[in-house]
Image 1 (spheres, one colour):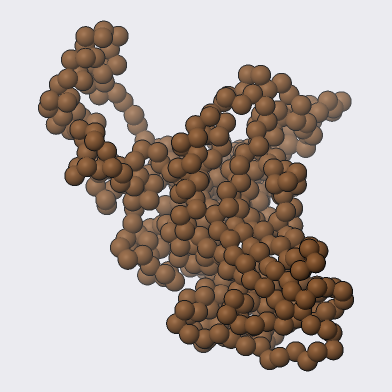
Image 2 (cartoon, rainbow, N blue to C red):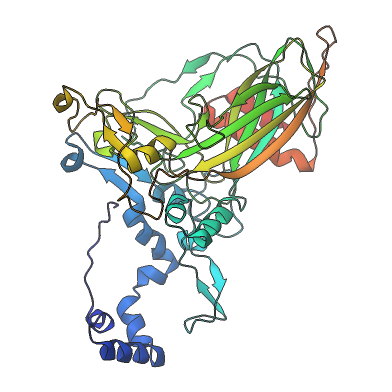
Amino acid sequence: MGQGDFVVEYPPLHDLAASANPVMRWAHDLVTNLAPEPHRRTFMKPFHQERDQSAEFCSTCHKVHLDVPVNGYRWIRGFNEYDNWQASGVSGQGARSFYYPDTPKTCSDCHMPLEASDDPSADDGFVRSHRFPGANTALPYVNGDPEQLEAVQRFLRAGQVSVDVFGIARVAARPARVAGRARAAEPTLSSTFAVGEESAQFGGRAAAAGPPAEVTAPLDLTPVIVRRGESVRVEVVVRTRNVGHFFPGGTVDAYDVWVELEAVDDQGRVLLHSGAAADEGSGPVDPGAHFYRSLQLDGHGNPINKRNAWMTRSVAYVRLIPPGAADTIHYRLQIPDDAGEKITLRAKVNYRKFAWWYTQWAFAGERAISADADVNVTEAYDDGEWTFTADTTDVSGEIKAIPDIPTTVMAESTASLTVVDADTPVPEARRALDVSTRDRWNDYGIGLLLQGDLRGAETAFRTV
């Protein structure tokens, strides 16, 4: 499954539709409009229309593997949007998710939504959209298609994910972790993609040692005081809401998807800025940002950053969010001795397809001149250096230069902290508890659970 594992052949009716004779094409179109059933039977197969087959049809390209004939190494799972959809509550076939939609959904429910149309094929005035809105802003941008770009960005902003500047915790440092024991009876999949509910290894493999942190939250409902000179941990939660597979999906080694957090006091001073993008947002992203991606390495430890997946030999990390789940992020904020009286925290989930480095390389990449260039590259690694100075005259697309691919803000959130003097007593951690905060505490606990922080997750779940 995957790799486009299907056979395509042209049915006889195609010869009429694609005939060089305009009269034949006109006759074909006329007959199709007058009596569409033969056309429908010829071209529309059950896997196009039946709900119990349409996702499997999509999986032929959206569940990928690389094998020895491709990489000269071994079988490796590539990206896989089918298995986690099927095992999650979104498909209606899974029972291990944290949240479930009101009704099960297939790929076409989200990516081929109904839209009003006066086309003869419309059913009650609606047809399935063939824009396939997903996350590709690069193609419509470089090809000068603002309508498609707007449709994709509208889709990305339509509540697919949420971000919550949830709380603060007063903990001295990152808690120690106890490594889980490997059990021979439970082999793990060789994969460059995340593995979720479909696997027995779903969740964190290591447990945090020590007592759970005392958390004051939610910040927008609970007044929070921090002291000048102290260090606190800011807790940010990202949750998938209308996503039916891992977020993000697809070739996640090639995108920039990250969380940006900025802390600014009322004097305008930036105290923390994680995830800043250079050049006023159009350049490379802070390498220390919290990314959602698969960071793969070749045989010499170089990042796989040119879609050269056949060179993948190991995975540094994969961080994706399952459908109906959450990710809890911890930031360390040092309060200066001369900080103002208020600190504003702003968090955003940013999406840029493609990654800055990949876009530079794809449009203007050329190898740097090297005396030993012939030994820098093999089928297993690429040690060569690249410059982004190639001629872009003949590149594909309307833009004949390296484009500044737009970054879409999918979700954002703000909260504030009140700053007091260092000798002011710190109030006890408070928790706003009511129906409106229930899901937020639950999301926070889900994120901790998936990190292996079992004690922290238990405390959060008991707060629900």
